[in-house]
Image (cartoon, rainbow, N blue to C red; front, side, top):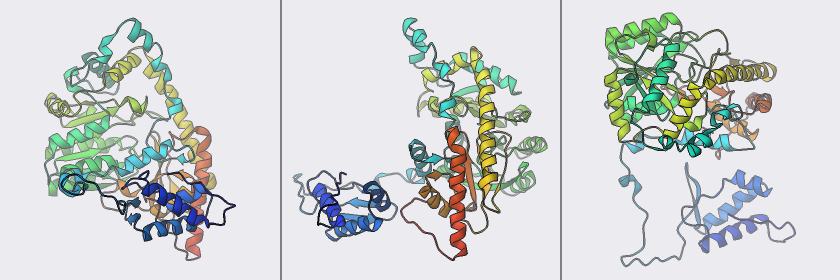
Length: 505
């Protein structure tokens, strides 16, 4: 949408905007369904007052050229005098509610999509996305690849692989798992398109509609969505500074007999909390007693900044009750889209059957790159380097919070992982803070999506790995300034509202 404002013209600015948009709609340049920019965004880009844009949009609505829909913004309507001759009358848009399946209605991808969009904005400091530092990735992983692929004509990296992944890489991962205390064979290992796929397939092969899944509360919101999409009932078990409350879990197991327990026991997403050793042991004992599967999501286990990571739950399981997931996205490059699982052979077989009809097999080139990266010793070197840098990033964010945070903000200092978890001062809503922080050009994730119970509006999650190192302190300062403005507004009984900004981003 192209708009040029003439400050010398006698025509009011809102009329200039109205006439130019009107002309583009009637000429067909802006088609029916086109979403106009939000009033605030267009006002900023044109250097005018928001009320000016609002008045222009009112004129467009008065002529029936645009309409507003809750959650969809302002969109162009069908052209007033347009006639489309199809031989059977005017063309009509499909009846989408009848076309899409009930299953598809269970998906809500807006949070992830919006977070990825935020991550790409150059004018905003993002603490929202759970993405590795792009500037710290092991770019040397690509060194020599062109020579080995082209000059040596290594076609293997471009061909299909078994659904479970290259056998050589599965053998290599067995070596990685041995260092983590898990002794497995290649036929107990399967490569995935990221550990997120592992969660989705677990839901598909283990759950039927109405089955109960137990998760930590708060927990990884994409896992909660995957389980709910299948039609499962998701129950939350609260966590404390020692991880999932196993005493409460046992009560749920006894009363409801759930089908699956999902846990991120090491540097948990979103809280950064670790499940203590005794609780890990007890969790396995309860799985055996109640015959319930455990899905252990270990995306962050290698990112330990002090001391050593605790033993994996999988390392304590000798009966096949634990499905273990991990990924290369959090410590190498997220765009490689490569993770893996370790589980009983029968579980691997079921996983492979589902994966075969979704994406056939993991990306061949990514598998080849990662195998080369591990076997030449570069992964181990890289992990030492990245843990040192991420510790520095965590400390910068922690110290900045100590320097700028308003009274009563509470936050933790995790030993590893990606996130600092904050409890907001009383009276501050994470939903309102999202909007206020956006004015200060900083983003984070509010706590609500991580809670099954619908709570969490008094929590926020801050990622310290993605934003440029030089921007972390400035971003924290902006965020804390936004908090203080909200607190001042509360003191003066002002209600802060902004209907233009999605409460997630």
